[in-house]
Every structure is written in structure tokens, then in C-alpha cells.
Length: 122
Image (cartoon, rainbow, N blue to C red):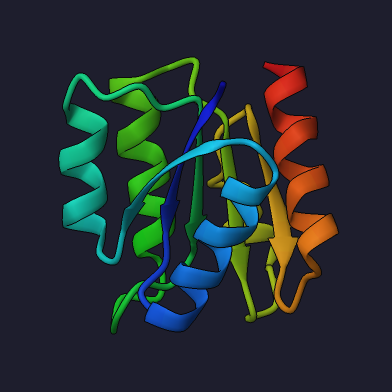
């Protein structure tokens, strides 16, 4: 069973995403900050996909930075980014190769389909 690391700084959204992912049959790890997520990525925990908000706290690109550092630590790790902000071409150019973007708001089904698609492509 794949494990998804969910990184979201808004507690209600983190709880909801965790519930949806678990109900779809995946294991979850969660983090509310880039620092917390980086600690998990640097650990020996099983992580099959990183699902992160682009903006964390007062850092609008913390999710991008997390994606880059996670790709260095775990090159095969696919990343699903999300944000309510419009995605610019400049931001998309910073995504790693094995990644996708899911705009907020999204449905539970859209999130799970995006996760499945990335896991299968990896």
C-alpha cells in the first residue's frame, strides 16, 4: 500500500486531505510546515508520493522549495503540487520532472485521480 506525505499548513484542509487519501486505501504521513516535511523526507520513512501546497505559512513558494529538496533526497519521488493561486509558467518551470499540479478547489475524486496518475507514471 503506497504512502502519501501530505503537506498543508491549514489544519482543516490537512485533516480533510488525510481522510480522503486514507479512505482511498493509502497510508498517510502529514506535515504542516516545510521544515517538518523535510524531516520526514530525510528520514527512512516510506514515502511513495509527496502532495504539497505551494504556499506554506507566510512563504509563498515553500512547497516548490520542498519539492526541489525532496527530489534531491529521493530522486524517484513523484510530487503533486496544489494551490489556490494561479500557476505561472515561471512556477511550472521549477517543478521537477515527475510532478503535476492540482488547482484548488478540487474534489476528492480529482485529488485521488491525480495521485493515482502520478503513482502509475512513476
